[in-house]
Image 1 (cartoon, rainbow, N blue to C red):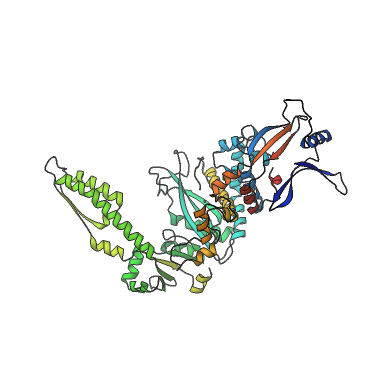
Image 2: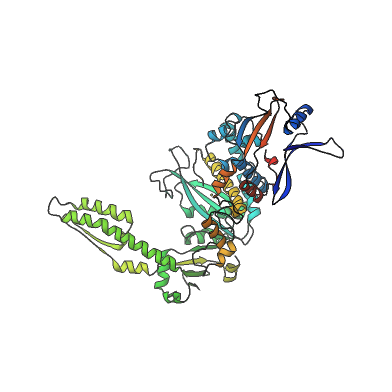
Amino acid sequence: MYIDDVPNRNSPPAILLRESYRVDGKVKKRTLLNLSDWPVELVEGFRALLKGATVLPPGQEAISIKRSLPHGHVAAVLGTLRLIGLDRFVARLIAPVSKLATAKALDPATAASSLGAVLGLGEVDEDELYVALDWLLERQPQVEAALARLHLKNGTLVLYDVSSSYLEGRCCELARLGYNRDGKRGKLQIVYGLLCAPDGCPVAIEVFEGDTGDPATLAAQIDKLKQRFDLSHVVLVGDRGMITQARIEEDIKPARLDWLSALRAPQIRALLDAGAFQLSLFDERDLASITSEEYPGERLIVCRNPDLTVARRRKREDLLAATERELIPIQQAVRRAKKPLRGEAQIALKVGAVIGKYKMAKHFTLAITDTDFSFARKQDAVDAEARLDGIYVVRTSLPAKALDDSASVRPVFHWSAPRVRAHVCLCMLAYYVEWHMRQRLAPMLYDDADKQAAEALRTSIVAKAQRSSSAIDKQTRGTTPDGLPVHSFQSLLADLATLVRNTVTTANVNSHEFILLTTPTAIQHKALDLLGIKSLHRTQ
């Protein structure tokens, strides 16, 4: 390190602390700190110190580090936020914790990272964070409209899906018992719906009461697209449980939107029984476009995935066999000579537990009396279901040419409905930032950075998605083409956090503090470069 006096034409020279280093054999230099506002005696003392002069009494440290805070991950996230214009929402992505914990992590006395210092927040308490959360909720419509203008346009696909998040306690106004996707039986939950651009970039989110069915959330999204986002025509893409016939007739068609969804198994079976398509179609192809009087004005694309066929047959056979293995001991207990199991109700309870566990009741004939129990497979039902293994039908209102051209919320620490909605909105924005960071950091992550090459490896549009050779090579070797270790997104953030922001004083002027960052490693330098962060000093 050295101090460089840089002349300025119309002002005093700039005094810069610089460092020389080599890249590919070439000498380069970087500016570490601007010392122009330092007292002259401090600059000269530091200059002498860097040249090896003895300026201190024996036994006294030349430089004292008063505090070191993790900084690289803050610089990476905050730099990305500034590039995409969302630099107010950084805390959720760096450390998703409660507001009390966030306040402690931001406060200078208890800081867990450099975030509070970089943003100049000073002392922070949880009440201020709740005020900020309320501020965000008030502006959610404007924020989402701005994102929609960036990522959505008339005629585009809009992806919509619904999920849920369980809650601890019973005080949340929105919490209800409902279909729990987390597998947490007996837990109250909230439901939320996420709108995304065609590339999966999140645009808007809405929270519903925990017992709201997926189809019931659709009307609000259509109104949002038409009214708030001012889109006259888009193609709404959703799963078959959400875009139902009732929703098409009552919500989508009146709004003059197109849709892309799928048929349920009973609807597919009805098409097959009515002769709308023949299974022999798939002897030489894996998809076919058909029409049906049952779906006027729609195109139906019937697809058969051979890998899915094999997987479903294997899973069904495993479930049938497991059910039989657990029914046999019950049958033996009923028929044994010594202390047999008796009573129709008692036998039925044990049988019902097994049938409910594997959900195979439709494939078995059960006969239960007070003194006997027997069971047998319904082979005709098994064979009938197996006919449709691997077959699914996409339904759409789009004509052929148009079709060819075409967030983690937990943990939730709030009870009141407005705060829960604001929390979920904040999570969506954190996911939005992470999505942008992942796109830029893909060459360093296990993510596939060569989507075109991966798509070219698929033998059919219904075949399993493939990974490109470069992605497989990264995964196999554990290193990138330039020899750096491959990371997950979270492990890369943890690596960046080891780039530290030091608060430093010198022995000769102990009252003057300055900030000095550790030198980035090769991994950190690469990540920051991919994120477009050219100077760490903007994030100090």
